[in-house]
Image (cartoon, rainbow, N blue to C red; front, side):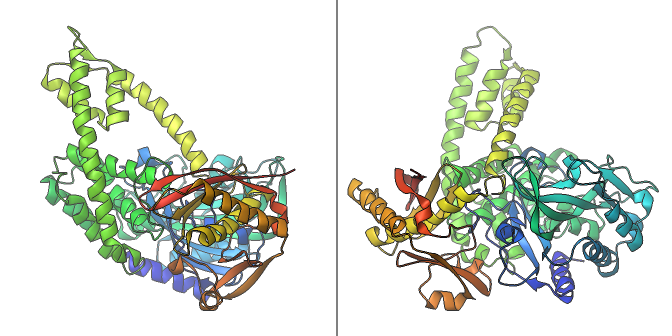
Amino acid sequence: MDTINLKKKYIDFFVSKNHKQIESASVVPVDDPTCLFNTAGMMPLVPYLLGNPHPAGTRLVDYQKCFRLTDLEAVGDKTHHTFFEMLGNWSLGDYFKEDAVAWSYEFLTKVLEIPVEYLSVTVFEGNEVVARDEETAKLWIKAGISEKHIAYRPAEDNWWPSIEQLGPCGSDTEIFYWSDTKNPPPEVYDPEDDRWVEIWNNVFMQFNHLESGEFVELKQKNVDTGMGVERATAALAGVDDNYRTELWWPVITKICELSGKEYTEENQRPMRIIADHCRAVMMIASDDAHIVPSNTDQGYVLRRLIRRMLRYAKMLEININEDFDVEIVSILSDIFADYYPEVKRNFNQVAEVLRTEKKKFAKTIEDGMKEFEKSLKNLGDAKQLPAEKAFRLFDTFGFPIEMTVELCNERGITVDEEGFKALFAKHQEISRKGSEGKFKGGLAESNDETARLHTATHLLQGALRKVLGTGVQQKGSNITSERLRFDFSFDRKMTPEEIAEVEKLVNEAIKADVEIVKKEMSYEEAKESGALGFFSNKYGETVYVYEMGEFSKEICGGPHANRTGELGSFKIQKEQACSSGVRRIKAVIQHD
């Protein structure tokens, strides 16, 4: 079964269970401005999981573009990816455990025809918040799963998003597929056996984790599910390597052609990284948010992926001065165009990003070679390159350790590889903690203050359009409990007078203390009414429009205050360049 049929069968199945199909949100959040990327299918739905009514109803289904950097170092194995697709179905205060388990089992065994012995599940072992989930275990047994293929697991494994994270959460049940194509599935499920690959997760989201530490019942019990397209595709194809499916194999074949090498154990990791990163770059750079490489936020991630991909291309002796990456992206765009038309529509945008960044990277490599030669001169009679020097070449100039070792070997010098590994492990831990902060999913700080700051971005955009002209469009935003950051299209630095006028207009809107009115209508009606909405291909048939008197009227689904007067005093702290043709404002709201 190919992935087109997998997606279609999944959507059709849940539509037959009275679910409404909704469009995939952008990989860059539109209505949740507290994070860099949508990391899970549920992220665009957080307001509705918390109790806001969804325009499409209480049963939803979709396929969603997702991106995570937390597993970056695992990319290169058989199953991990940075960009991935998630099939999801949701109950917003409608059905709960019984239907969720029954339908998961029915879809896997009846529609996809997976033998039941190839499936195992985990359920929550219980803690001080929720008792041991024997109810779900019994439902799985009733459906047809052997009791020997059920395991109780702690919160680290069976609580989503995590027991520490704030916001909507709950215990889950995960479904695993036996991926070993040479040996039959064992009689007893061992959760530590990595031949069991997770393909589906049903979250029973019934709590809100508050800043006080309390877990309080949500006003509705939700079911939030996710089925990974890549892993499910591999399972259906009967392979234990995601890259041997039709999703990836045309790309791997192209990389083999470009490098003159085969997909052998020696070359698999760099080939997989090149394929994965090219796909992630395409999805980010083709987005209508117009993300370009930079040293901050989404732009930094994009730059990091491109340069990491180029490093591994060099390791395979691919000529990175040619458009090999554009050729790969062309293949990928053909694979995804039917579902995400922006990958074709904005193909030239992606190609330009790759070419421009490649030129900058070439300069970095050139500088790195100068640094390498300098490091060798400073060695004197020593015959080993210190770990600190090797790590600087890696961290600052993008030299993989293999490249440094090879260069040193040519000169009869060794490298302190053990010391490098220790420094690299420390670097990974720092990166992991940073990623957890940047990619926490907008749940940890979903509170009244972020709602007020989100509301302030509406007023800010309205003021910017009055002062700078209606060509100003939102290009991105990021919000914490302390401040807002707003990116917008504009081709020059704002003058102090313009900044002061924008600030003044926002504060006038706050002082007016107008009611924030939420209206539900079709997307076409919203546009005809004059509501702003710059992500036209990301909205469903029905949308919410938030009106703030004469000051703002926007399509949105995020959290908002009830009146503008709740915001306090608005203060712009900084205005700066973000990328070509895009400016950035950082601002705060202060309460007396």
